[in-house]
Image 1 (cartoon, helix red, strand yellow):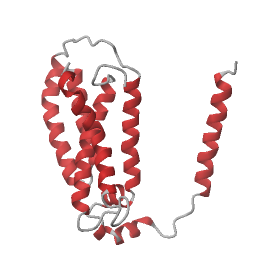
Image 2 (cartoon, rainbow, N blue to C red; image 1 turned 135 degrees about the horizontal axis):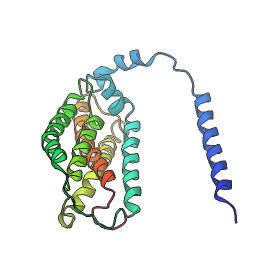
Image 3 (cartoon, rainbow, N blue to C red; image 1 turned 45 degrees about the vertical axis):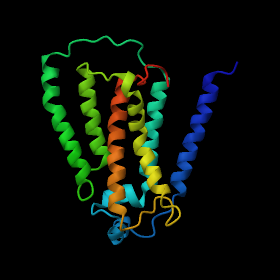
Image 4 (cartoon, rainbow, N blue to C red; image 1 turned 90 degrees about the horizontal axis):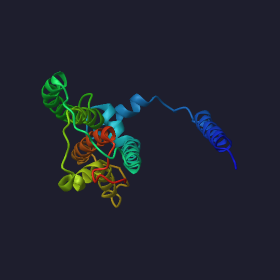
Length: 218
C-alpha cells in the first residue's frame, strides 16, 4: 500500500512549483497602480481608493474571498462539531465585559460599514467586529434556537456571496459581470457590503461554534 507521504510530498512540490512559476512570470505593471486607480475614481461610486479596488475594479478578488469563507464554514459543518453542549457560568468578568463590549462592537461595525465608501472600513472590518460580538455571546453561553433559526442562519451565511453574484449577473446584458455603471455603483457597493458584513459576522461566529445550525453534519 502506498504511504500517504509518497502522495503528499509530490503534491506539495507541484503546488510550490506552480506558485513559484506564477510569481516568476508575472509581468511588471506598465505604470504605477495608484495613478491608474486615481484616474478612475469618478467611475467607482466611492471616494475611498481601497474600497474602489476591492468592490469595483478588482471585485473578483472579494467575491472569491467570500466564497473561501463559505467553503471553510461548510467544511467545518461537515465534520459534525461537538455532539453535546454543556452550559457553564461565564464568570463575572466575562459577563460584564460582554454586556459592555457587544453594543459597542455592533455600533462600530455599523459605522465601519457606512464609512467604508469614503474612509478606511468596509465589509470585512465590520463583519469581523460582528463576529467578535458573536464569539463573546457564545462564550457567555448564548445559543440560538435552531428549531426556528437554522434556515435564516444558512441564508445569512450565503447572502454576501449570493448578493454579490446577483448584482454582477444583473449587469451582464449591459456592461458585463461585475462592471458597475457609475450612476449605480455606490448603491450596488453599499448593498453588497451590507450583505457581506452580515455573512462575514455570522460565518466567523459559526466557525468558532463549529456546529451546524441543524445539529447534524453538513
